Length: 217
Image 1: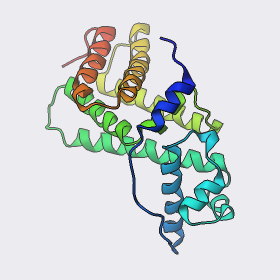
Image 2: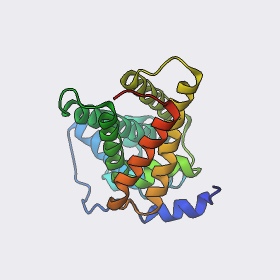
Image 3: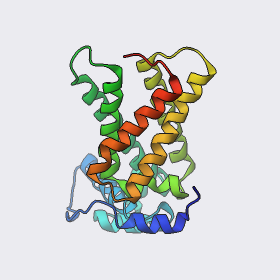
Image 4: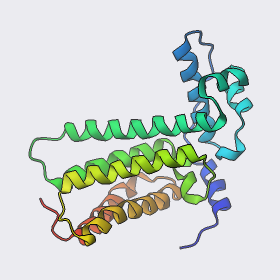
């Protein structure tokens, strides 16, 4: 399906989570840095990377552009930090959710749990998450970070499922994430409806199981 990236990005602006918090002055170095990062997260959730300036982030954080550059080096460095915190938060949440499952739970349920955490992650930042899938510009550093994170996700799934060393299974593991991305993009464009969470997850699990064949219990 071919989509109009500009139209989709315009639609995504209205799907970002609302926040009414006002920037507050912070004096501690780490608190100041986190304040800038939080402002960047909020602004990049409302507009594309190319449309947000360092000055806008600084103003939203109650800081100066020079201070933003001091902490993050460049606009690209700031955006990449936003992406990194999101990637790390997702990985941590998925690990915690998996660790909370009962011993001996079926592998399918572990994958399901990971997917449900992923949907929570997306629903918290729909615009930022969907931007690269609809042609949104991103700096090279952020693209490379996403590629590393995806490779780790593939390896985590491989460790969990322990598929045979067949070409079919290799394509299945990688193709699964492509299926999930496109299914989640459709979910985001629909407004992240709660009623569609489990049908989406069931479809993704079915796609993975069908591609792999026997994937364990």
